[in-house]
Amino acid sequence: MYHWKEVTADAGFAPRDGAGALVFDGKMWVMEGYHEDGGNRNDVWYSPDGRTWTEVPDTPWAPRHAASVYVYDDSLWMVAGNNMRSDVWRLVRGG
Image (cartoon, rainbow, N blue to C red):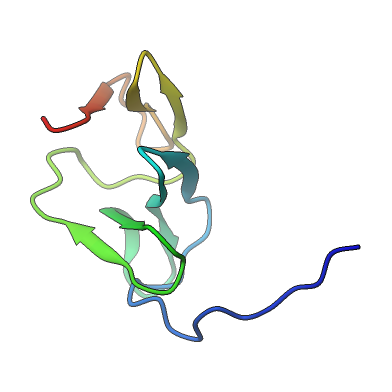
């Protein structure tokens, strides 16, 4: 049996639709997405516990939502999205 428990009422990042979310390097990651008050986003956040979230500074890509995000070859990947670019980005552990 499973039971939901709220871990935090405010993770620190803006609410969003169409965000990418995954697990990489033992952490939960939330990235990009859309909010009607700010449009497309290009921020990236991670957490080791779901309670404390840290933003990764200086994300280099254009804002977007609905990108494909996944883990492959010991890296976090983000591909394209709704901004109509065919760009591919890779985050390497420690890099």
